[in-house]
Image 1 (tube, rainbow over the protein chains, first blue to last red):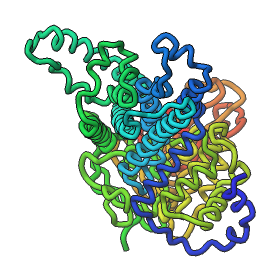
Image 2: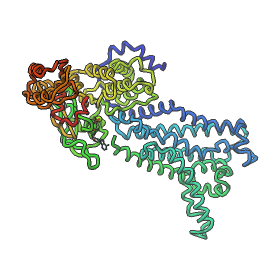
Image 3: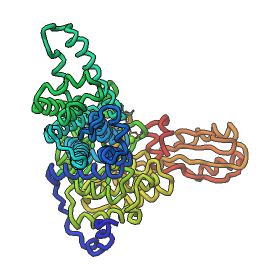
Length: 298
Length: 315
Ligand SMILES: Nc1ncnc2c1ncn2[C@@H]1O[C@H](COP(=O)(O)OP(=O)(O)OP(=O)(O)O)[C@@H](O)[C@H]1O
Ligand SMILES: [Mg+2]
């Protein structure tokens, strides 16, 4: 029994003497926090979400303890690098936001809970942003803890972090925002949510850009004199933030997923550019979803 | 005095199909209004426009004089249950009600006290800490009703509150509804069950194919339409064609039908001369087994208003 419930059970006196019913409609902010709180409570009851968070957090610890060391870093590099502790970042930065945000809104319509909530004296924007806020805070929180574990475990290796761990974390958080907003905004257009779609698009997009770069930039298809590639600006898009964030900790590991070819293209812009692109991307997808929720008929 | 609910020239179309056509309706403060109509009449559509789930194609609705387009303010003192909504299955009634309470500005110890009150009102207090996903349909329906009662609403809008329940569940919910009457509280309840209207409401609006065909006080309506009944008669031997012909010529009989070898129905418009029917049965050497009035007076009225083709919609 929680303290709330205990208070109810023992509160027959209060029950008998309820004051005059002059409930005042709370402010938008209070309602937003109520929606946020309810969504967090829903997350806390979801086994899949809890399982995924544990997996994400446990990787740095597994790597540190040596259990995963041979599997993950064995062949690639003989010398230990702290960024191995976050080796799955490029994958998780896509999967976790998509999992957290890709279904929470569409399921309200599919499971008819919206039929209850949307009749209450609460604007639809409040539900929309309250739930998004919960998805973002939870996703970003998972990465914050993964970074914290990685730093703590890494110092156990006796490793210092020569590169920009804080900058990497900021970029990671911006990427999480962009991808959470994308999954969330798109989910309003699909009955079963957007989780699978977002994961698929975001994982394949880097490969497509890579192929385009190889075909045009390196072969000189568009501009033989250009040392970079016309596709370089695409590297600032959110699906790349995971690789970029890893690269900022350790240049060698950032490109591991896509091979050496990829790593030579990482890091051509400043962190500010990546963060700005992610913010714009996120806001656009949020607006896209909001328009849809606004005009949705139940 | 402003009305509890005003519906002004409301039209709602889905593509080329018009579900609600130029409907006007008023629910006064303290009035218990039954919105009666067969399946697909447009009852839910009307209630959804009022509660902000749909936007009107034309016309307007208001609650306590506040235009429903200002959803937040209009719904402040309104509790609704529209089209069997669901609660989060992982939540308990306490969790759902405290969420709704917070959204409505009920906080602190008052919140806990209020949760207890409404759960008592719908007789779900002992289930307060069980996950709703495990509840029966009737229990879920009572939790959604409790949710609507949280703000001690001036206006309750309920869409088929007993649909999908077994007879016992229906009776229970109806008893709860009757217990919710308060001075100055108004109710708008949609249903296709006539006994629900006559048991719970004092006014009725009948809609069919998106149009209002009648709106009146329930008692007044019944008074004006006494005699508008259907009798159902069972006899012990076979009914003959001559008898049916004689029955059709009988005073005030507008329709007669042999439903079986041993039974027939006769619908009256105006005075139903039951003794005369018994005489007629005797004259044709039929042995009377039973004679009942079929359905309520309101049911017969409803049939004559909405036409026989909607008969199957009536329970
Ligand atoms: N979103 C929609 N799109 C298209 N048609 C709709 C939509 N919602 C309702 N309708 C149609 O509008 C008509 C009225 O529907 P409504 O749900 O209001 O009926 P109802 O009176 O509540 O009936 P029931 O007793 O079955 O609940 C029906 O013919 C239905 O098919
Ligand atoms: Mg309906």
